[in-house]
Image (cartoon, rainbow, N blue to C red; front, side, top):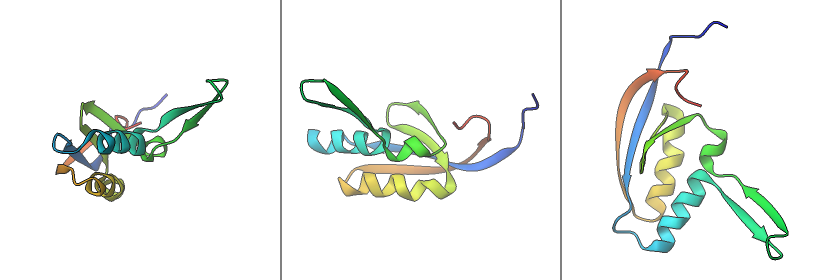
Length: 99
């Protein structure tokens, strides 16, 4: 199989939710990464998708993710909604790294 070594423009987003209350932190995590919902005493489970479920991204560490340039505004909007702080750094990564 041939692997591409092409590089793509991306953004590294580092966010800080330390000043946000617990409800806001959970809300951001659920909106970004999704969650599992349990119904009827866990008889039924539902996988709720987050924004990143359908996007190509790489989670480097806690509160640090890399996304494509065009996907960055979606992440910013979620963090802004709870008045969290964030920094964005333009970078280039191998396109094969984002999944």
